[in-house]
Image 1 (tube, helix red, strand yellow):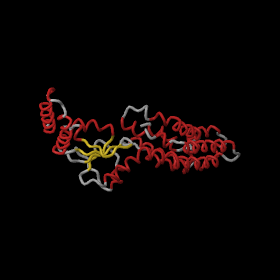
Image 2 (image 1 turned 180 degrees about the vertical axis):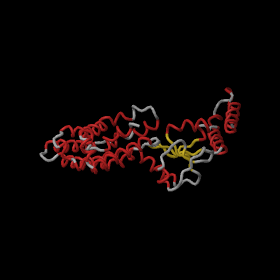
Image 3 (image 1 turned 90 degrees about the vertical axis):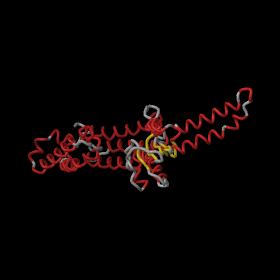
Image 4 (image 1 turned 90 degrees about the horizontal axis):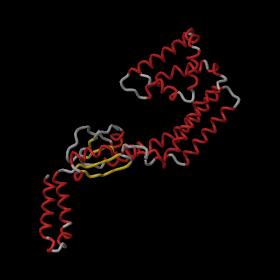
Length: 304
């Protein structure tokens, strides 16, 4: 239930410090009809979204609107609060930490999907990203010492924050998570058989593919869209020889589960290719019998 209480200061960046206005001046605000309405609006939204079974970050935006109006009406109540800059600076420190830690993000993951997805993090959090973050931090520090009303400087900090988030951070995160899904979806458009999502819920794949992706039990002959950490389950069910990997990038897989006769053909083909090598075995060490046993074993394995 406290999820949105922790998330609210992040959602309100760089105006998080203005939350002190309703906390410090609650009685004063409650006496004004418009302020009282805004407070009730905010509290009702917070209660409803906190009780919701699904809690996504953007749900709380419905309660941010009355807070922003409230902050604007009483913006001068925090005219000299220098501690208000802790929040924009904390964001800059976090963005800087992502750059410094990018090279170790993948190594610290035990999950195959996360490790493979984050393997490209150093390429996304690169020198251009670092330059942009340092420029943002410098802008925030300059705004701290600028002799203008606090609310004006925070508004400019909000502009700088939007620029760094939408031009650097979000594209980097999208490249890590969404680009592999996009490429998989575009490739899957070429498949002439059913495509099944196996233990994965990333609906954007269907958008890129331009068709609904079935969610059911995987059957032989299906094309499968899944994550790297789900592959062992399919191999256990159908056998590793029956799984053909068509696409593997950023922890996202496109597989084809061969039918039994197709898998048998692959095994027999391998056995045929190996006959020449077996024929080269001298008779003294059982060349003919070894050849016959190898072929029979391959056929038995295909039948199973």
